[in-house]
Length: 439
Image (cartoon, rainbow, N blue to C red; front, side, top):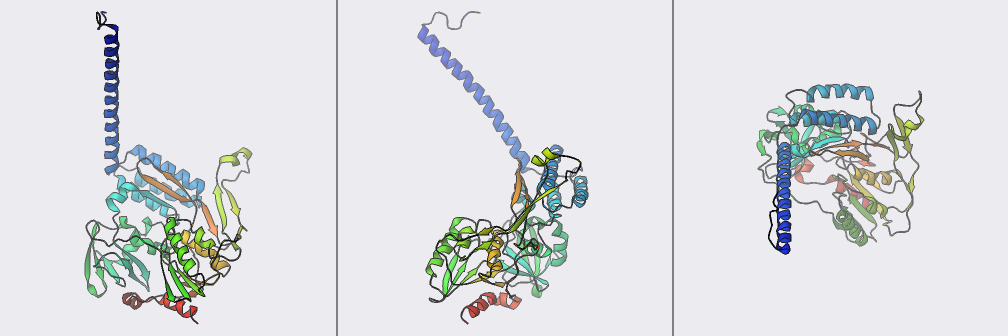
């Protein structure tokens, strides 16, 4: 073959060779980039569609089974195997699209009756998870709005029906998809599980008033929760509201208020509706003036190092328990005055982790309602298609070993607002706390 650059000066030949190689490399990179974009586009299209392949269904279902049977504490294996058999019959059918797969997976995981054990799909959330715009609790045998971001729905409204179906009946039909540690916790989480509602539906409120909820287009008054504080009695009784433990800002703000209230006789700390979502340790340690216990814990292990000693007596599941752990204050500045905690069914997860020792050592007086009764360390799997499985892997009990999950932390003084109280904006729990503080 005749060299392509015969007769040209060596410097020119070298320059042309480099350019040719650069062109070839550029061409290869262009092809690879085009291929990558095609694959990325195909994956994005698959994730945005309602389709899920049989292979993906089988793989994810297998991982769900493995994760639950490996890590979930107190698993009734026989019952779960029965539920899993029914689950497979649903998801392996020809009509099992992505939404059907998601709902079936949510229902399977919800059979474990644990608020920290749930199945999530970002695709389902994007397409069917728009918030309804208000929260509702079962209250005095009725379903009552406790907060709202919509002008058309107000606190204290009683929701009698949803699209003509009685609200209690609608809840019972939807309950199987709601991961919760008790029916009470499930009722609290009902309207916070938007995938069980149509995108557009009609509420029938008390008095027969009807309100159309359009989840996609309703204008919602959204504000980020912030820690707030004020003197209820100047120089004597301080009040701090901590709406969440997510992020350091909420706790640092609470600590700032504590410094302001350092010489107060009483501080009323309000954690009603606090979903946890973080580590409350900083604030907890700043309020404890004596040693306090941690939870007793139990976890399940299956396999791993236990197989090294395998014999005919090898247990199917080995349980590891810990207890008697005590935290001792280390001289940091703390508020040592009288402390009153306001709690309710909306206080869950890390909020209950925060409250528990105050109850056990009587460091604070607890007013309001029993907490949600759901707190656990978890094990989770993130799937490539945007799905996630979160499984409780530790069962917490009170330091004396008594059950917590599904039970909650009871107040020392139980106080319930009435529907007229809610409608009038009257906070009877705070009023009672102030009366106690100034007695």
